[in-house]
Length: 451
Ligand code: SF4
Ligand code: SF4
Image (tube, rainbow, N blue to C red; front, top):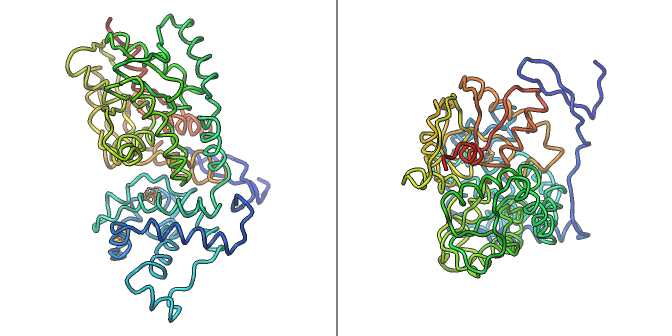
């Protein structure tokens, strides 16, 4: 086989070499700041982010190394750079020099040198390309250090320094400018709704002035998995709910959060919050999207500045509630099924049991992966990683953990409740010519409704 420095050869499950084109290694920059200004902007933001909790986290690491074995990047590469705690090094260096209790001495005797733009650039790969903020390391850390959250905070400084992987920056900027990262503008979405409504003979109410339930969608569903819109409508119509989609607040994905721009994160969340308040919704349903759950369910009230005046549920929680109370009925699905837990909904979000209750009502033979639930392995596409082309090689490497988990389960069908995970699985399936297809939990319920 000829060797090309721009071609990488990950192994598939059979050990066959597959070729993917690897872009030349690069660190991306946005804006025309000087190196000094970039460092200054990053440091200013890091120092602002060092609240009491972050400071305790950064002070309490005992260097036990347990987080390494929890991280799919380290496990698949054995590269010490991918040890979770190493991903925080410049953040720690900045803390000790600029904000820690001995910062004055560190500066006076130059015990911690100032972080350089070169270090920040190299760090870009560690906190964007090789961290899905899955929180597996957080779960395992004996000191309770929330590394995933610290990585999220570190991204804020990187954004202000204009040092974000370009594709991730571009989708975040597009979401801020157009309201959607993938071009699912209000007009595109409305056209899709009209087409889906006609094609599937299902009523999809849009822009009701008053409704009990506001439904939100992810742009991945709108553009790639539009049957999710139909499935949601079928479920809500079967329940006889007074619900609506609103074109002034439907996009649940939050690339502002993933890229590290807090203002963009807030702008995206506020659109949904304002839309729910306007139509006096009592419930906001989040779609099959992992990080959308974290952004609204756990950060929504912080963004709003007070408790949200409505309940927030992930669609799997909504299904579990209504199947559990008998309002929704489904046929038995005589299949063995394995379920992939999306990190941001299960481990990070706490909604681990809801999908299992739904699968229980569907009567499937559940084959759990090992491990599963809160300890499940990440698919490798979260945290915005799936958008970063130069991270593809690494992403395919870590995806092989998932392939093995699914294959070992022996189940006939693979189900999940996150469209970002589903997209990662679809891409992995095509890349490895794998025989497993990812299915949506919501669509499985909608396809088996008893009217
Ligand atoms: S598991 Fe926690 S305490 Fe141990 S090295 Fe990792 S971050 Fe530090
Ligand atoms: S959050 Fe996940 S991807 Fe990031 S360092 Fe921890 S285990 Fe690795």
